[in-house]
Image (cartoon, rainbow, N blue to C red; front, top):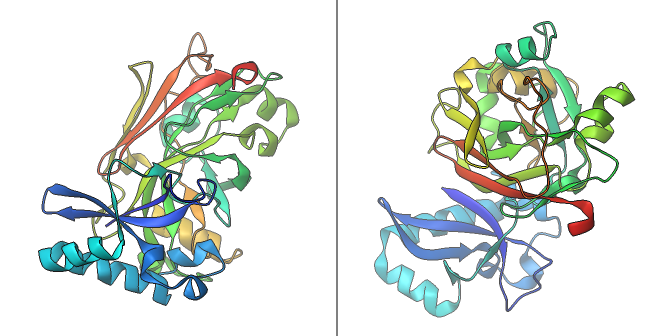
Length: 312
């Protein structure tokens, strides 16, 4: 299942709502299921993150409805008559989790990236966060802060949590995963290194492109066997595989949930492979007019242009 957040011209474009792409075999039907339309306005969750709760009735009904529409052409036609479906050409896509409850990142989680950063292989996951206000959609511009001259890219696989998780053992970790999405951990290196900690340099506005969709775990049986790449203006800058991660998804969930309660709609970015700009010789930093694309096997592409702040 592929989950999106979207708006349409006939709605408040500032208020994303959840949707599911309807696939039949290898072919897209051309419709997205508008999950909100399955419920009366008064019966919809007040917290948008509740749509990502796999134990919640909203998610369960949306999933069951989508599956039924894919199986039954008559039900699909009836759903269209009821106004439950949105033609593929109509929606504007947001990041699939437009405002995560928590946006947790993992540093130095690929051996080669730790080496190119001239840092030791960590014994435990290195954890930091990004403010959720820096999340942007596929296609939206990454804005270079006027005070920074060293903005960098980082292709990452992100995990979207689908159940409240506390003290979860690694052996049960996948039970708490809704799915996966592509992520770009954009970083102002001059801020990051000058500050002596990473929060400001990682959390500038627009520094967390995410999407296009959340691909649920049934479609990604093993997140540790996925090609992961980043291209900059068509040139491949990062090219690796998630099997190179030091700490896999189960260990990350186990480690985090020991001290942090994970909740539906939280996002964990699992680290970046080698090839980042600051470690190149000479360094490569983002500039106005650049075009980035994160490509992860099974998840599709996440493309974003780069603009100077004055041009945003």
